[in-house]
Length: 252
Image (cartoon, rainbow, N blue to C red; front, side, top):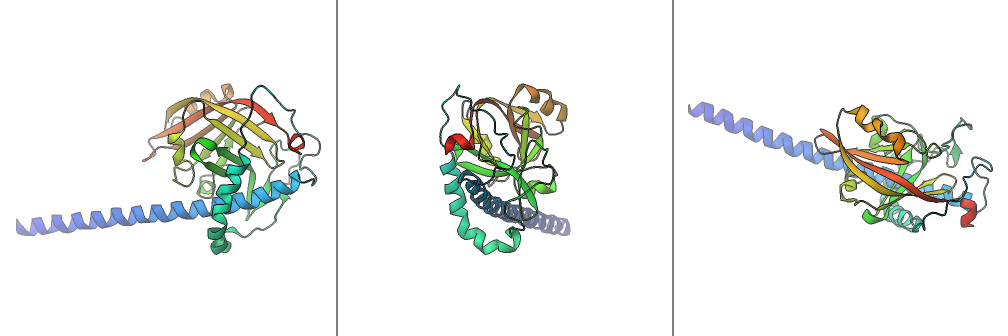
């Protein structure tokens, strides 16, 4: 009986240590992902700034018209501030975030969502949510592995008015979405410097494997942001409606 008690104690200690190691690994991975994303955002802001300063737009003269049904709030400062805070840390992680081709566009020039390639990852722009101080770059293509770098475009596009963006539940990525309120503003800035403004009109929880539920309403919303809840059993989903847009030319 005594031996059985000792075995149970040892197993309990091992389980406790395993849980601690797992939590430590997750924390380290979360912080690494945050550093990589913010380093990419810093470079992306610089690349977009070049375009805004008079460089050649990536898609020629195909900028969308200005919509004036809502007065947008300025969000570029939030992105710049978040990226600026990360510059010191990013300088220490150059092996992970070396710029392979600053300002390089995607090969498919007919794509309605062009991008900049940074460290082998192609970004179509960045998303900001002032309410929670969030500013993150968004990658062009979806794969589960790419989510370790930053949020990604899951499906759709801004031009089609049905874009879905997925992000890991890292505290440095999309975990803060749980603190977003109905009516909050969301801004997406593409690589040409065009800004698209949205408000959060619906917050819902979709089953973790309920892909039909995730996609069922997608065409009814101009932008959807989602992330897994802790444990991955469900997905926190923000459905957004476009309220206006501003072209890079209008900002000059």
